[in-house]
Amino acid sequence: MRGEGRGRGGEPVGPGLLHGADRPVNFAKLHGAGNDFLLFDGGANPALADELPPLVPGLCHRRFGIGADGVLLVLPTGVAAARVRYWNSDGSEAAFCANGTRCAASFIAARWGWREMVLETGYAAIPAAVDGGQVELRLPAPGEVRPWRELAVAGTVVRGRYLVVGVPHLIVRVEWPDFWRRELAPLAPALRRHPDLRAGGANVSVLQVEDERTLGVRSWERGVEGETLSCGSGDVAAALVAAAEGWVVPPVAVRTASKRVLTVAPEGPPLASPLRLSGPAEWVAEGRVSSDLAAAFRLD
Amino acid sequence: MRGEGRGRGGEPVGPGLLHGADRPVNFAKLHGAGNDFLLFDGGANPALADELPPLVPGLCHRRFGIGADGVLLVLPTGVAAARVRYWNSDGSEAAFCANGTRCAASFIAARWGWREMVLETGYAAIPAAVDGGQVELRLPAPGEVRPWRELAVAGTVVRGRYLVVGVPHLIVRVEWPDFWRRELAPLAPALRRHPDLRAGGANVSVLQVEDERTLGVRSWERGVEGETLSCGSGDVAAALVAAAEGWVVPPVAVRTASKRVLTVAPEGPPLASPLRLSGPAEWVAEGRVSSDLAAAFRLD
Image (tube, rainbow over all chains, first blue to last red; front, side, top):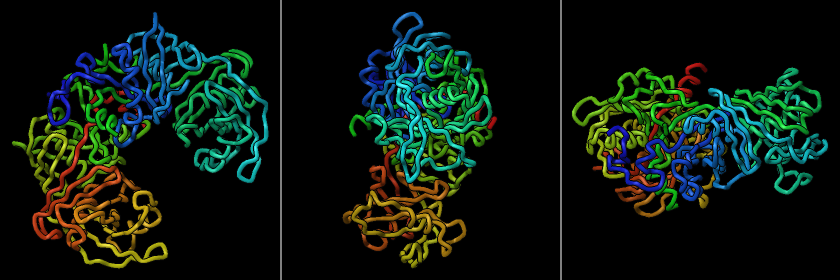
């Protein structure tokens, strides 16, 4: 049968959740700079908005499931316009994920044939343009930009700047000879929940200036409570802070822990202007979710 | 287009590696007690035997790829007979993987319609029977069964027994009130490479007797160099040692860290007889690998 309408043991897969015969390929896995996502097409099945959320932890589980940092659902809302919903791997819904939104644009381009579109996220309505494997987003000016401050942590004092790019970030400049190898713990977890920050703390990104147009950035993410290979909005926040200080000249190339490069181009004064974020959205696989997986996680 | 013959950006996917139009669904992801694998059908494309090995690290990468502990390729060799090749996630080929072989049997049942078959692995020719989501393997008697010995490690002395079930294992009985939560490091890594073992060391499994028919088993695996949710051959080794000592009465139910249960049934004296191993093989997803992924890892 070679995968046509069959599940485990060769039995036909019945209709139902994630398995309608009209949707032979019902998920795609993509990653944006090593930040990986499962994408679902709500245009093909609007009921996914209700059916998907309880399955997110199972889908994202890296041993029992397909494995991902998060899940995105796209629903067309008009001409070249779509709503994008995002869930963290723990099942909680979040307002925004920059790398995930880039992957959503690539997914929409492949599914619906749009090259330019507006994506309505919980953060803002974000114009996106897809050019082959590169996706550019136009993001609003950052919000809640606060002055530099000194934060006591782990027996030392760290100078950091807090700003919001959809979600809150704390940016710290470092000069470490072993920048890409040094353990971010214990510095990052203590900063991430530092009592001087707002309730909920912040994602923490450390940046290193590589040359006048290039930063290296590593991020410790809330929710994940660990380092990821890239935090898109943290990369944006780091680039804007560095450009505002004159450490780099825009457009800023941000090298991530994945070694993929994102480009951040503010359209005016870095901390007060909209900006363009561009970078790769790479396709990993497309497929159908097994009914075994859905059943296992509904029962757990 | 909804996933028919298209890749990223909506461009058609050309023929070629992992992408022939005759193979719309070219991988499956399954797990056996939380030990997860990507499976490929060499009957549909014999060239995979050459094309697949260099792609294994990329396919198994949990951020850039689909993510798995290993990759299996099945190739039909006769009537209800198939060769099963297994690669660890680092790309190295291994003689045997018990959970992977159970998943391979389930995959073959779905693809080729066989319910009973003989699987030729690097360890032995292994009869397998598929009954819905359960797969039973008939394994040879363990080899190289050595006496109990005391191993000095981490400031203490541990009593362990070494035996080979396709790959080498060291079995240790423990009585820990926090059996499922205790960190296996530093005990397990030091045992795994203990100088009193043969060169190459062994997988280390700790067992706890739960009742007269049930063990809890946790395993620290070579190659992974960490704990997995289940090591099938380690679960077999632990069950045979415990049955030989009279700590449990066969058939032995082994609870794994995944909470899935494997059953080990020796056909005679536990350390000198063939045995049956049965347990679940659960389907996660089926799909097509993207040409992006193959290209990224061929270039790296």
